[in-house]
Image (tube, rainbow, N blue to C red; front, top):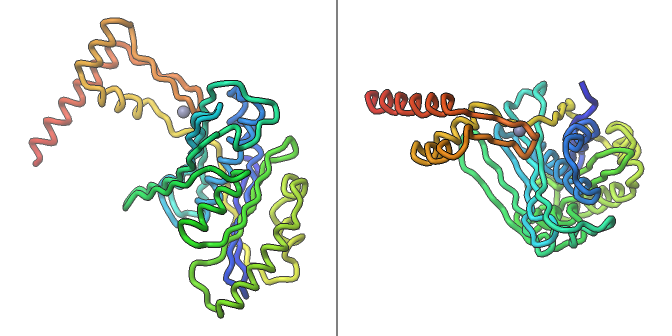
Length: 301
Ligand SMILES: [Zn+2]
């Protein structure tokens, strides 16, 4: 097991909630198999952290993804966090990847990496309506883009700090609750106070300190209720079954055309580098099963 976990918390006397995340092992596992230039690896790490932070506040079974599509050397960068159940024992699962095309300077800034980029946040519950929000990725950092996203889309003041260094990968998010139980003016001054305290946390402290020390260091003069931590795992959700379904989706004609030219259909997962091979026998079996299940379906309806 790893120490990667998400720690939610709430102020008992103020309408503000927060979440802290540590993702050292998950990031290491994900980047190990990849060959990203350092600035790309840093941004991908921050995207993974953001996907988790945003998932923490959603009581949702399903997927949340954060993507940026841009015209710089990063064409596409994407991180996804999945919750298979609301059971607090169950880990959040993350995956992510970046598509790089072009030269990445050793200290390329966020804006240089994703020039003219669009930030897309997608929430896909297992049941219910899919939601998508889009803003320009035109702030100086990813954290500022997410803050501005919340401000534009939900008018929710949000503070986000992200760190991705050799010393650690971590994030802290604070957010005003959508509904306040106190006077507006009081809620404003509570937020100013908590925001100022949070802003005093250094990158070094965020990278190194465990959640409880971060919360103590920032908010020890306030009443903070801490929820049970949730583990976070880096884990891809690709499978032979899903690849098989994709092949069936191509249709028998296309599959046969491909197999006339090559011995097998090979599917590479760009998230985890797994490779799935389907030879002629496999493909024909898949297509036959598909025809059979279509017949059963139509017999039942
Ligand atoms: Zn995979």
